[in-house]
Amino acid sequence: MWFAGNGVITDLIFTFHLEPSALGLLTSAVQFGFIIGTFLFAFFTITDRFSPSKVFFVSAFLGAFFNGLVVLKGHSIHTLILLRFLTGFFLAGIYPVGMKIAADYYHKGLGKSLGFLVGALVLGTAFPHLLKGFSHFLAWENIVYITSALALLGGVLVLVFVPDGPFRKSAKAMDLSVLYKIFRNGDFRSAAFGYFGHMWELYAFWAFVPLLLTSYVKTHPNAEFNISVLSFSIIALGGIACVISGYLSEKFQAKRVALTALILSGICCIASPLFFGITSEVVFIVIIAFWGMMVIADSPLFSTLIAQTVNPEFKGTALTIVNCIGYCITIVSIMLLNKLSTYIPMEYLFVVLAVGPLLGVTALLKEPKA
Image (cartoon, rainbow, N blue to C red):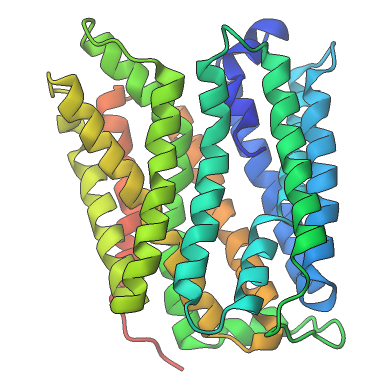
């Protein structure tokens, strides 16, 4: 449901007579909803006090409902922003809660299991772009219906087939001091700040992939891309990267693998102006696909490090609050790129994203203090 709005953004602009800037507004509305949702879930320690599988199902049901309401007639930019906000709000009960469920099932091999889980997230995130690529067969309303139906199906599957894990430790009561306690842990802070740097780049890159490809086509008129299908492929390949990084974390330290991916994605940001000068379409696509893999490969490993550095009783809250802060950062980077795109040529725009990997690498290399 996350990028359902992005997948049909041109149809929404045409149908509801929106301004082109609606892309940044609607994307950020989902992020903002997710931020508010994760903050409230973490503040009230919902994931640690209630059955994660049930929280997942209820959130999937309500998220699918508000996502589906986008197809109603007569929307303005304000009502669309509200619906995308509410969709994002209930996604807070899906993504971090899913990681909490995985952490409750796996004590050893958590990096590998989260590699598969985040890989699935990436594939789902990319899916609306794939549907849009076949829009000559599908009306945009059907794309929204399909994403809602799949989200609801996912919630039902978790409720029916994934009971609470054997390593789950339920918090007995609401503890408003939890957030303060977990951030006192130096190892937790190191992993969390590395994740924050990663998030500065990730969603801004994903949101602007179609514009990156469109800009390349304008620079090289002979290039023939199906922008939507190619956007899906670039984002979806990140899912494979997550699985690979999960397996690598079994052989090498999770921190080392995450650091390598973060450095490589940062190099891609810095070198991005050179990509637009590549005349070979194949070479260009391979490089952008590599970037799409490195930009997300470290994500499950950061979640692994975070889950392993906190009291098991508060794993869900720790994962949720880190998600909350991370997605706050994504709003800033997305809106910044959206604003700068009117002043800076597209080929130089993505250099701004290098700030995140740079700060993330610094956080990981810094020796944590108690």
